[in-house]
Amino acid sequence: MYCVKCRAKKEVDNPEKVTMKNGKPALKSKCPDCGTGMYKIGSK
Image (cartoon, rainbow, N blue to C red; front, side, top):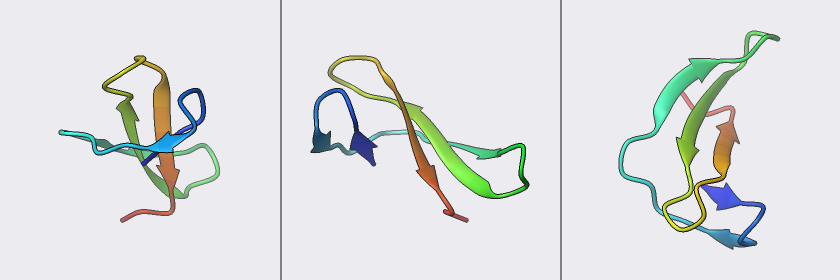
């Protein structure tokens, strides 16, 4: 996943599967370094 605040790709331990308002699947997690919310859209 990509952290916008750190501007780098990060490995996360346990991403959460969520469905966005428009119905698309996504993965949600927090950056291990800065704690910013990270999303990866379109992942099943």
